[in-house]
Amino acid sequence: MTMSFNPVRRWASRLVMATGLFLFAGAVMADYAMEFQKPVTSIATEVLKLHNLILVICLVIFVVVFSVMFYSIIMHRKSRGHKAAKFHENMTVEVVWTIIPFIILLSMAIPSTAVLLKMDDDTNADMTVKITGIQWKWKYEYPDHGGISFISSLTTPADQIGSPRFSRAGFKAGARKGENYLLEVDNMLVLPVGKKIRFLLTSQDVIHAWWVPSLAIKKDAIPGFPNYMWTRIDEPGIYRGQCAELCGKDHGFMPIVVKAVPEKEFEKWVSLQKAKQASAKAAGSKKMSKAQLMAKGKQIYKTACAGCHGQNGEGIATFPKLTGSKIVAGPVKNHIDIVLNGKKNTTMRAFRGELDKADIAAVVTYERNALGNKTGDVVQPTDIK
Ligand SMILES: [Cu+2]
Image (tube, rainbow, N blue to C red; front, side):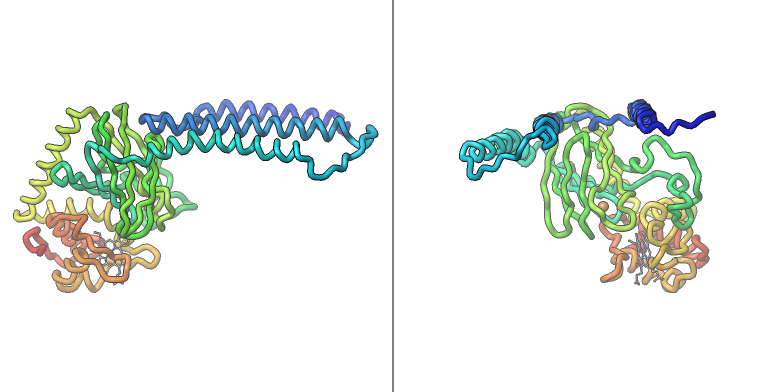
């Protein structure tokens, strides 16, 4: 076999390879859909159109500027005998290169401002939903619907997340990743279609951002400061998004899932939620068996506590382990107190607003009788003050 060192042939073969790779990449990318997510609100459609318009304007500028530049460089080069012109203060040129960019900017600014104004107009809403960012989950409240309120947290099993490079204590690597890997939650934000929904957005700890691409809304959730945005969803469906502001260790683990349903279905969901809320309240005054408390407690521990204290109570990084903890082994009163009220100036926050009495009783019972602890104590919802 002879090797060709002819530079022309070498470059030609490189070009063929690059073209092949490019075509191959195109075929692969077809699976990943290069386009934006399908817009399902009028605003999202307008945002997409605006994006396309500005992309085309930029492309035209690119082609025109580079064509003139390359034409001039090649056709008017020195070796052809051309000499650089020397002139100063050419009025015509200066007027032209001021006016053209001005017109281009206007052609972008006018449609952009129109869309921005529409996005900003949250008046005349049919209902309000309050969204609170919490490290690392979302809380949703429906003040217009009997104050329904719930927490929405990630449900992707830990074993899918574990990997040798990204090892989290207690996670086993290697499980096959599901279709909605890291974009699945226990409680979806259920919304009616065709209604103008106003969102009031804030945070309990650090800055988060609520973002669902197919609704084209994204805004910061800032502690101590309310932000507003709105949407009107046209098509029933499930739309997924994520926190879009780096908010700490589990920033990538606080997805958003919106379920848009017809109004009738929404009303049904509302009454179901109200009934659930009422029965949870009633559970606060009922006794539960130890097995019930342990099962409920385990589930709450996994979603609300394991992110810091570890799947098996071993603690993660600077977060303390609960296995053999003095508070867990000590008086029940102090244990309940730290879960209810948190500890000032630490990331151990008050769970008072997030968990109800039965939840707190269950998680405290669980921590005292699992995770390597064995106090034998059973805490009842009625013990939570
Ligand atoms: Cu966040």
